[in-house]
Length: 459
Image (spheres, rainbow, N blue to C red):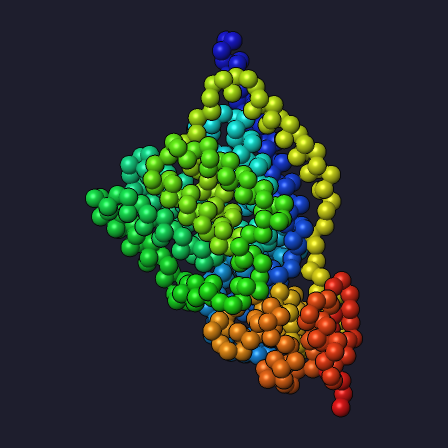
């Protein structure tokens, strides 16, 4: 009887700790996605989904820019666009915010369930909360959110296949791969994971061949089968240098220092206890992160899985109650801070006011700073370019990216590539704004929240 009561109490404690942890991480993600808000790529993703819902067709050409109407566009993320637009129609931006929280908490839950077979409860709590803080930077209402979840499920499918010495978990993952492939281009990572498994099991690589071929076939089950090739081609483009997430991490920032420190701590704990395959996983994740900070989430997921399976907490440390005390303190503080921020807003982009101004004054075309394109399009403004970067390799687009990076002056660009456009929307500070303020024939007509509008003077 006593043993049964103790078992029940332990189950209640585990369930309570798990629930409190998920509430805590949910509050972390709620605040993080609210801070980013619906700027950058979020508006054009939502706009595309609304267009799909309205027309019942998936667009294969550009309809939003004045520069290249009809330009071929293979949308590798159409299913995310559709889902996010449907949620926006029914619950607005708040609904989209909750979707992100749900997806990220499902990611935590998935990794928690994996770790519980190897780690004590206190370690699971610490891993979940610290990893959630590491994911803050990339917690945005954009399709890569689901790619983090699917990437974790891909890793866990491979882990299960190893443990069971069976291909069944890999085959069961293929329907998820189908959804992943139509939501985000990072689905190609699955092929890399399968390739590594084949490499390390080279004597028995044939047993993976059927799964690998089936996976390749899944990549063609989409409206535009070759959209993935175009998506990957866009990743090697000057446009990426305009967006901070494609740059190497800046370790002058506290959040990047935290990610680096957290990763080094976990890797340092397990490096001497893991085999070559796991070391390659960690190296690939680390190299990807150092190339572009947007890969930090994948690196943390990889590290979590390897750490959870490989580390054994010393009995002396566990019995000292130090880990339990740390878990309780971090959980309590995070919950307390999280609940104080429950009313934090889902921030609108700084350029929203400028977009409304243009719409109110019936100005329908503009040369815009790159990151503002989606918001302007959401308000019906034709832009020169937006976050889709589907013009990679075209000379005018390379010049446009150089203008965004202040590598060439904006005046000659406007004269050569936008001669018939009378409006420019740009940040109101920096070299670009200074050039516009001193450019003959132009005047500033709007300036709020760091965004300004310049208009060509009438002759």
